[in-house]
Length: 450
Image 1: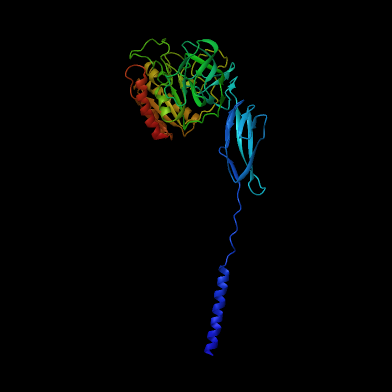
Image 2: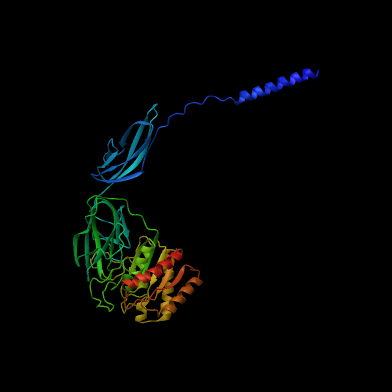
């Protein structure tokens, strides 16, 4: 009996093992299907009218590739994937790859923007131009009156020129910074004082290729007016330069406008002296450069928050105007309405008090006017903006009133208001060395805030 049971168990065990072995058997591997792929190296390309851009595609297991433009009136494409601009606009280029095996084609697309080589008439809405600072369109031009206002543009070519209208009591001047240049005194262009419209070469003889230029007004609105009528390159414009990491708004007097900051002597020459001002070599502009910030400067020599040497044109009544001056030397007839453009700001610098201290000084009035001014700025720029109240470069008599204003504003819930003393200038209005030293202190302060 025991032998029978053992035999039965042996058969059962064999059956289980055999079944398990059968389950472990797998089907023989099949050869993987060959995959065909295609892709453009970039999603967007740029070229100009009459210019070609070489697009590039990557393929795998493709037998042949064909190309087509969805808008041949704007851009055509060759068998070598060179896309030629025909007219301003955009075209979608489709690359279709036929596989080495099978008949299932695959495709990829990119966009080619065909950009103009000129803007014969500027109106402030040019998609490829980055306008800097407050401006207005009138009399056939985009008028940039404020200190450090102007434009930034990228282009493919060797040079850039502009037709500009200019006028003033002093010589209107621009600086041009190309391809990352940092010295606003290196390439300065004198414009006409006589309300004439002329063509100016902004930069020339560059290597053929991609470039970026910033064109900035270095004289102030009180004495000069500038309007950009047209813009042209010998190649074509590229996409609008990107906004910088931060936006800084500056409200100030002669210190922020760069009044006499380029004089060669410690003693100050008469106010009528020409060509000794560079509004892009001030403490505020230099600090903005250090922080990679776009900056808008609203400043005027002789102005205070409530006092301006007997002149009724004071900051508290005009801070939100398009430009900070009573005069329009180009006679555009535009007037000077409230600025309706972008007023977002990460930091707002207020450097006002020198002229209040020197004419009709009233500490209590100054404190109250500063509080009201800051409340207006907070409403205008938003509660997240850092408000920095600055003093010290020429006077410190307003220090206590400014500190009181700061404390009262913070006590009222405006925690983003801070007080900052900048180094005193060696003599009179700050010169370049004074501005450079102050810029470092300001930049360090802003880095802690932003």
